[in-house]
Amino acid sequence: MTGAAMSLSDVEALIARAPRSDEWVDLEFKKTTAEREAAMETLCAFLNGRGGTVIFGVTPAGRIVGQDVSDQTVREVTALFQHVEPGAMIELHRVPVADAGGKELLVLGVVPLHEQQPYTYRAHAYWRDGSSTTTMPQAVMQQLLARREHAKTRWENRVADGVTLDDLDAEEIRRTLRLGIDVGRIQEEGALEPADILAKLHLMRDGRPLNAAVALFGRPAPGDFPQCRLHLAHFDGLTKDADMLDHRPPIYGHAFLLAREAEAFLRRRLPQAGRLVPGLFARADEPLFPTKALREVLHNALAHRDYAHPGGSVHVAIYADRVEVTNSGGLPPDLTVADLKRVHESKPRNPLIADVFYLRGLIDEWGRGTRAVVRLCTQAGHPEPEFFELPGGFGVRLPSARPLGPARATAAVTPRQQDILNLLAAGPLPLRDIAARVGGDVKRETVGDDLAVLKAAGLVAHEGRGRSSAWSVLPAALHGGADGGAQQPAQNAGE
Image 1 (cartoon, rainbow, N blue to C red):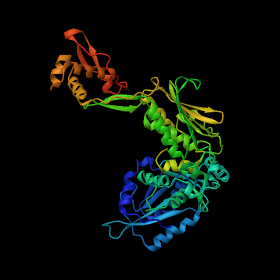
Image 2 (image 1 turned 45 degrees about the vertical axis):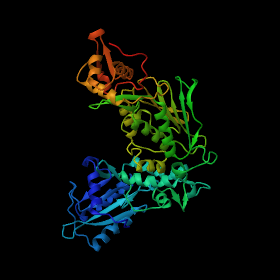
Image 3 (image 1 turned 45 degrees about the horizontal axis):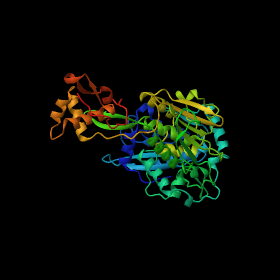
Image 4 (image 1 turned 60 degrees about the vertical axis):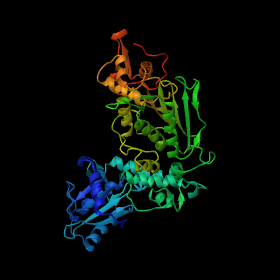
């Protein structure tokens, strides 16, 4: 089939976004259609993954050269589509190449329906191994066949009883399309209505939304889909028996709403790690845990949890020494907790739901997300995260390098305090010299108050006594080690 028109600039952008050649898992170049058989094998491999694009008229190095494309050329290529089983949607685009004597590019793109995998071409299944197309291993073939059989009864794949398009968040559906286009995982096709977008995402059957559409975009009442639920709590101790610093009633809604609510809760309740911006000495506050790591954990919990059980949910809990995120549904039988810290294949419980998270750029398709969480947290100075299984569930534990008490508000560094920090950047100074250089009608006592605030914030230090005492900027603060939460001075800072 021929999709919406594609321009040369679209192809150039696609080539420019391509990673290094040894990582082109979803893009391949063919110089001419003489290689069409190999191209079809690659398209079959893309169909057995997450889709991809083959471009005729481009050298293996990514240089656009074009080729002569006639109607007969197109017929010869499209005649090969019938050898793909089950039948797949293969988009074909003819793209003129400027200043190339009428030469064109022929672009073929596929997006698989995962519940129909494995796909075959001329009765053979193909697989993408890095940038190479190979015959699919027998073990992978068996797994995909088993998943195809399971798809017939999977909760997310059933039609949602009593749910219509009016019960879904239309703006969130449109946002999914925009985000997918922005990250290059959905091809732009002009204005589409929510029903068209859902059909493109395989979330409709006979014009009716599937359960997956409710989990992703629904606005369910608690009694209709009680499993679309989030629990949030902050404990003043190490166990759930401790007093609660913050506890919210369960929140019901679609997965993206719950993700935003959970992230906002963590942002409010977790302490901030303060630092100075190098060269500016302006105060900047950052999350104690890397935002990317927290989002990865939340998105994985919402995408891969078990939605079939009405009593299931996601729990986000802050303790005195850690953050824990748990969800209903354990790991797949052939995946262990230890696998999550090494290279492993992504095996989503809910392929339709996980696909939409992937298309929005929220989760990774190659099982690298859990390893990224470990790397990001340890780089931020925290102990290594832990993955653990519960009876009927799964959890992620993020130990903290510092106590997680009540969140403290941080005070912004004032312009005068920034001037003081800039002065101290050149070297230690006594209070009298700092006051003299700040200028204006600022009293020494006022400068002393500023220094006390900066000291309480962990930005400066005071050494010595009397006339030999001096103030200096803390090196740890310049590298992000200052503690958040400037307090009011208890007394004036003197020499």
